[in-house]
Amino acid sequence: MGIFDFVKSGVREMMIARPDAAKHLIVYKHPDQNIPFWSQLTVDSDECALFFKDGRYMGYLPTGRHTLQTQNIPFLNNLVNKFTGGDVFIAEIFFVKTQPVRGVPFGGPLESMEDPTLYEFVTPRIFGEFSLVVVDPVRFVVGYHGQCGGSGDNDVVLSWIKGKFFMSVKTVIGQVCAQQQKSLLNLGGMSMELGARIVQSAPNLEEIGCKILEIGNFNINFSAEDQKLLREANKARGEARRGIGVAQDTARAKQFELDQRFQQDARYVQQLAGNWQNYAAGQAMMGAGQGMAQGGDGSGVAGLGAQVAIGAGLAQAMNPALAAQGQPQFVPPHMQQPGAPQGYPGAPQGYPGAPQGYPGAPQATPAAAPSIEQRLERLGELKSKGLITDEEFQARKAKILEEI
Image (cartoon, rainbow, N blue to C red; front, side, top):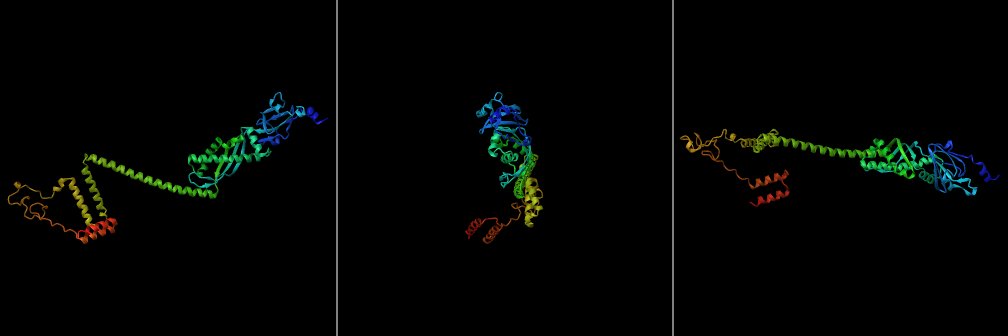
């Protein structure tokens, strides 16, 4: 009996299914491309079967047991080999898992990245586990077959997917850091958020027809050198931000002090019934008193006396009645006692306590003007103390010398 007679009469009982030894593979390719009519194809509950011919996708069979004949599976008409009398299909059959594949470990360095806040280039390292599911079996097989040549080794398939996964992780990390202005040092506490973002987007896995479902034990770390580099940059940034914060707090405290003082001054003016002149004089007296308590800023007895005089003068300005106490009062001529000098009741001629300008008071001798030499010496002292500039010194010196 020839080969064709064997095909025609003896292969109706052929069974096609994924063997037990290949149950763990994401993609399993049936080794024989010659599929007899009436063969029984079994597709497990966690997979589907894809038919390809000459590199083109021809059809799909879901979970269940299928009898391969053209009457109930129309796309098989495109697979019939007429050379055998129409009793054999020529096709490549791929069994692809459609249920999640869990516990896939990953780990290793990403490409060099710039920290968006510290502006240092480092290489993050990621570790963990992920689960994936094939959402587009046709796209996945086409992409897989082109990359792996139909390898039956699951490690080869997963290695290829991990490369795609690493690219998507880097994209998500860059997006999160840029949007939230987070340093790469903060990523260790954002594992849950990053995992959710990677699950939602994983942009570079869509092109191969699979999707990341979840990520477990996700961890991001750095080498000792990168860790030190980021920490030093973060320390410098922290010191700069603290300096800014201290300056802002100082400015706010000063503004608060000024606001409180303004409110206090407003209350004082209101209590004085709007008499701002009296309030200002009182403030000046307080300033003079503070200067006296501090020793007149090193001005000695003369400065202290001047401050006392200022305080007394201000007190007289605040209350004119004080100016009259203890001072001789001027009396009009028609009210003077007989024999008394004009202007003072009963005061003798030359009364030593009489103010200048009143009858009987000694007239003050005008103070002598400083000499040219004294004025030039005084001008030199002002310059040596830094109270006037060189230009001002030369201008005033020339003006003094013009008087000679």
